[in-house]
Length: 97
Image (cartoon, rainbow, N blue to C red; front, side, top):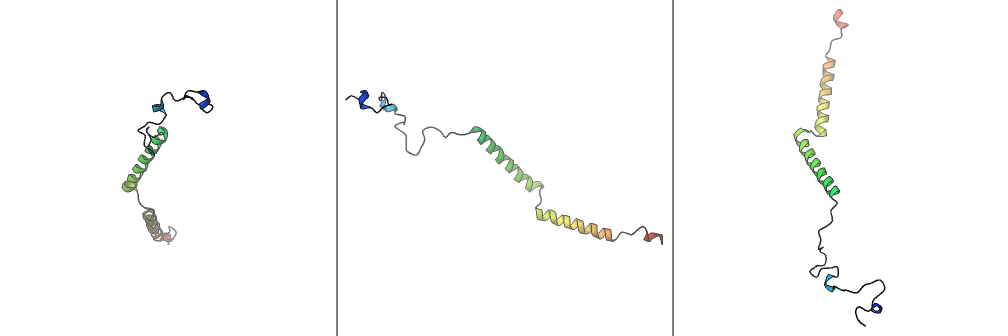
């Protein structure tokens, strides 16, 4: 039977007219793709923007930020100073005597 004979082929297939163009290039290595990876550009753009925001936030924390421990220590210091100052106030009723 000839290669172009319909009975020699499984149903639904066509004869190979160009065997060198079988869909996989001859120089194709297993495990490597001949075409670049497909990239979702919207996802790539969003990921890049997120990384830039995180980098800017880290920089701002260094420049402007204080740790939570520093903020709570400062708040406690201010509260104790206010309590100390309030304890030293004179009542207006005591000054009339």
